[in-house]
Length: 317
Image (cartoon, rainbow, N blue to C red):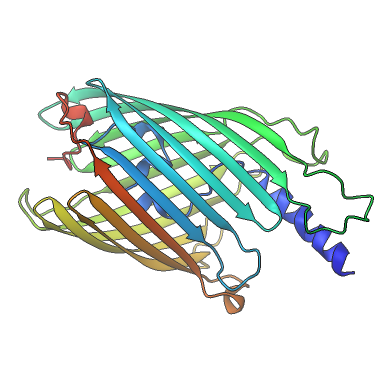
């Protein structure tokens, strides 16, 4: 009986996670790492920006999801940028390894108003498999790791006007072949998402900044969608800054029944960056785990100020 339950659990995880086949989105994009969710941010800034992120979800539950990723981007020429991301994701008996290579081009609409338009493209590679090393080797129905390699593309557009920004993206444009899985396995992986926000400052030299933002995502295959409402507060000390905030995530048909909610905080001193996020899941598993923990570490290296304002991280002034 235990073995059958284990197999059913694996099949359930495969059905859910096989629709993703990409880097899972938690709140890592809020740790000054917008590039991890949109290629349009590649090359915006004066440094090579590197961010390493680790997420442990539902601490206290055996074989709960764990994700590690490393992302870096840099300006290329005057108006372009490139970036690369690697990730490793473990969810029960499923494993995902993957990478993303991105390119962005930035255009200036009005340099005096800090009005910019950016376009981004990513090539994604992913290897998905089921780890059967802990299964009963004598069961004839369990053979092979069900390993499959996937190739796909993402596109996006980013609009910035002063301190306002909005990014529109489409991920996993290509359908996925399903020969290696059950006939009911969805082959439409496309999902669409919007990330928008505004950075409020009283004046240019103000030490304090408030940044509300929203992240909305919808999947084409089954229409499921979710939204993050986020609020961040920053305090600047010349080039250094400290920030704290909170995130609220929910399914869009259950606005008052959040999936998770939690605080977050971070600091950038000199060229080093660190952030921590905690989320508590308010679903039926609330009583069985101590929440989700995320740590981000980063470094900004090799400063090189660009000649075009479209690649400067001006903050909108």
